[in-house]
Length: 431
Image 1: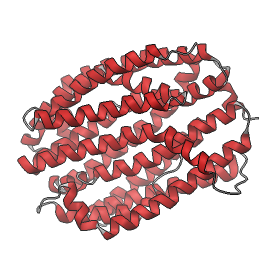
Image 2 (image 1 turned 90 degrees about the vertical axis):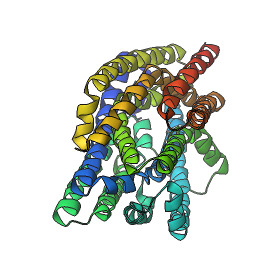
Image 3 (image 1 turned 180 degrees about the vertical axis):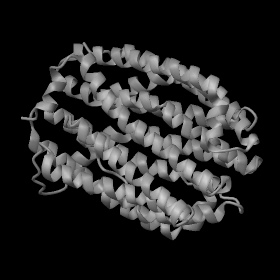
């Protein structure tokens, strides 16, 4: 019996959620800090134009991560449910089917990207002064696409939070070391950034193999591909895909608007702000990531009181973090921008963007937690509705507000989606 998994149904919720959140927080924070350091290596080691070239590829990187997250979270939800029922063979079969989906699909995507490489770079918004940077970076990233997940969501579904932390920390450390070597020692430019990312992904890939061979409590007896199981994995994970993929589409739209109406400095400014936002969202993502297996396990065991308490504590933790972050960002926005660049124009642009976007932190916690709740209890309809509504609303306001007021699209859309999320949660509270 997997005692680590079974404690999700017995341990006090406050302690369980805190322990899981802290572990996940460390992993996500380290990853976010790595991404920030990655940006610093590019901006300080190569230049702001190189940063613009790398940043326009970020929508693809996010789509790549979104697909991996969709498979991992969809499979993780099923696995948590099976572990709650002590059906270890079924849990193992879910993992194997998830691997089939991911590796076969990413192989096809990589081939397509290589064939249409130049067209895709143009589509992403590459201008003449940043095109070569984007092409060099994108080529290497695509070649390593198949290694872009370590299935940490599945590892968390087993309650193995320490290993799920290590599978973030160790590869990220590898990435930082090789960033320094490839950029400052060997001086490979943006190719060095991409190669360091590939080294990170391969390390995570090898660690996931080690876990499933040596440490997993699942029982693996793969005989054939189960289409119904694949369908469940995809439908349960589609909400995570929409969240990340939708964000990549939003970034794509913003980059296109900025590229058409401004110079590269606005694209660079938005990239720097995105990295700050990635760090700001870490505590919220840590809570929701920890919350998902707890809700799934207890809901499948009909422990509905524990489900309600989990949601309540998650909201409290998240809003405490949001208030602190809003205060810090408002006071230190310019100083944070100065970490990335000494260009005063870019610093002022970052300050203006941050002061508008931070309003969103008043509404994002509830949206994320309620969406996670519906996904964890397998209410795919409402989870899909919340995420889709948010993305459509943001996209609509981006086109309505245009370039001068473009940054207000996020807080306005988050507020409207906040109201919808609260309504749906009250409508579907567990008995």
